[in-house]
Length: 238
Image 1 (tube, rainbow, N blue to C red):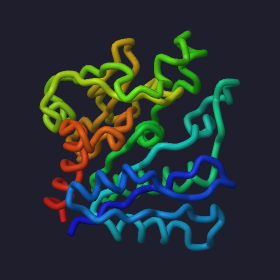
Image 2: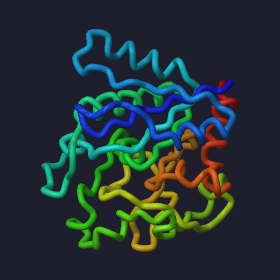
Image 3: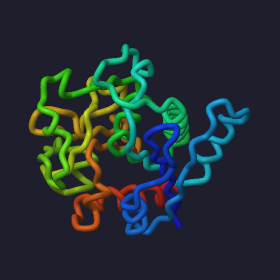
Image 4: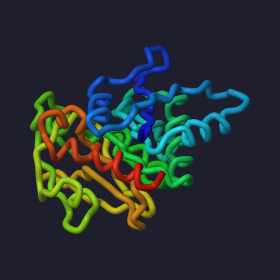
């Protein structure tokens, strides 16, 4: 059975570690076994060895949503609109992403996971879309399941997986990609131009999305297809 690791969802250092159940359900529907990675203490003596062991224990990894990244990690000063920062989670997520890519493990980034993969590849982020692009907050921070439409770029992995040119998505983020990281290709944008998905130019099996497909996957095949793709490509590469 394919084993898919999931990064722990924790918003602050004092909040409880866990994982929203929709992630687990989407992985199970794809026929894979979900395994949750804990956040390691930042100064643990064998930190790198544990990260390597996490990556080697699974066939693919999903990077889940969560808090804002420390802008020092992508060369910026803190903007007043930047939200909560969780340094230990930043460290473990970046270490896992880089180790997974080095090991050739398929990856799927969701919301913060997209921002993580972009930062890991040397990209930058808008710390607050409303302030930096003069957007009304509700444009990308909505409780609606169909908040806005994303348009997929032709001849991309994302287009091949979903089989459509555009679809509605949920949207609850205030940060987004500013400059795409080295080796990443934009594969979808919202109607106002915000980058909504990226993939790897060299064909590496990695995909990152700004919306939350796990919340839509039970009722929509175009969103569940993303988890089936991850499980399928992981099975092929075992």
